[in-house]
Amino acid sequence: MAWENHTFNSNFILLGIFDHSPTHIFLFSLVLGIFTVAFMGNTIMVLLIYLDTQLHTPMYLLLSQLSLMDLMLICTTVPKMTFNYLSGKKSISLAGCGTQIFLYVSLLGAECFLLAAMAYDRYVAICHPLRYSILMSQKICCLMAVSSWVVGSSDGIIIIAVALSFPYCGSREIPHFFCDVPALLTLSCTNTLLFERLMFICCVIMLLFPVAVIIASYVHVILAVIRMGSGEGRRKAFATCSSHIMVVGMYYGAAMFIYMRPVSDRSPTQDKMVSAFYTILTPMLNPLIYSLRNKEVARAFMKVLGKGNPAFQKKKKNCMLVCSNMIFLSL
Image 1: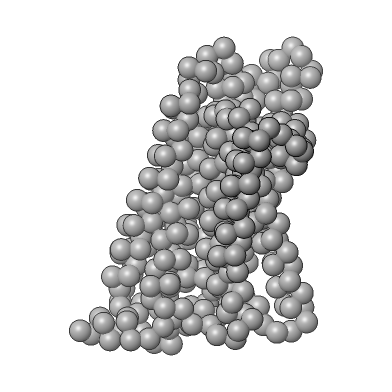
Image 2: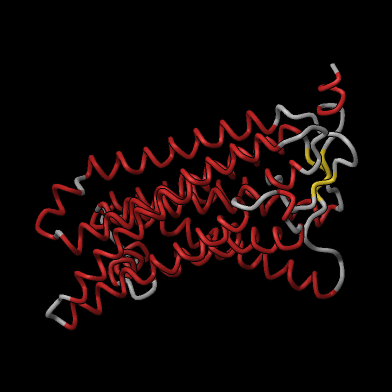
């Protein structure tokens, strides 16, 4: 009964990241612009890969899952933050907070493993091109994608189950713009040291293991690229891999900074800024980085814009209808 009185009888308060000063109004408008670009960019990437059969390859299948994860990730935090800022209401229910934590942690974990799968895909494509169709078959690729979602969701279930088992009391003010687990733990009435250790173990599995796979893959890739006799092949390989390395560095670096430090060493301001970087900015950069200088994506985009056969147009119409519904629901 005491746990219910502490936890269920009142909502949490999200303090947010912006006030109504001219500088913060500008920054808020900038975030909305980034959100719009990220939403449209990731939606377009998902639709292009779905519509164009020539993009139905392991590389683009994994890329479509990355865009879908980024799309869901940015929609988990920004719409609620925007509503709170514009309405002046900062409260969030326990159910809403739990939903944010589950989606956020699940998508973060799933994307970590998906980026490792994409690094392995590039390793096979560059180091073992003749065996690519065997080592990265459609079945193996789908298994990697599904496994990423399953592992991420399992991590989300564990974290949310333990996090909501603590009693929360006091001011109930979360010093963040969304329900992040480390920020929520500061409100707990009990000692959370054991849970912090559990989170650290989860981070070792969800962050360090994929990073080890990525490093091993790209060490082999770099060695193979250096041995390439063709200058054109070397440039193409570096262009393909450099974008992935850039995303990996930003994403894993920020995630480790947030989740692999003790709660006692945290600064709310730092956590909010770093979280905004990889929950808002990175989802915008991913489709831009992967689509820039990519002739196949540009060709697919022009094909979708142009006239095609009736079956293709019908498929495009159905996808655009789904897209418009997603936009309506996010507003």
